Length: 65
Image (tube, rainbow, N blue to C red; front, side, top):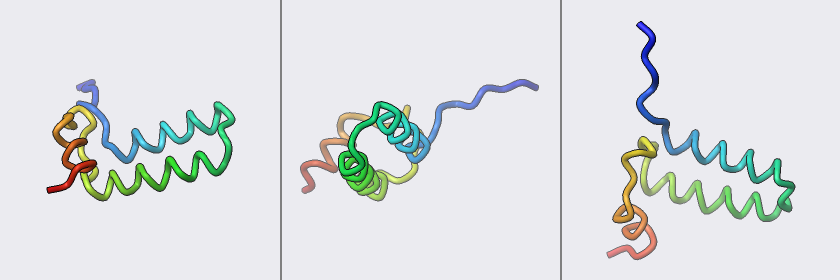
């Protein structure tokens, strides 16, 4: 049975994003800033499948009740 994974988790997406930005030669301080903010987002949202994230999730994080 050759099944493809059904999406990937937020932590893996963040890791890939940071690697990509590092490869683009962004400054270490910029990468660290991205990492800090994205880890805070991960703590808020949980390690969910990226395909499950919605704009409502982002709004809830940026503008808490």
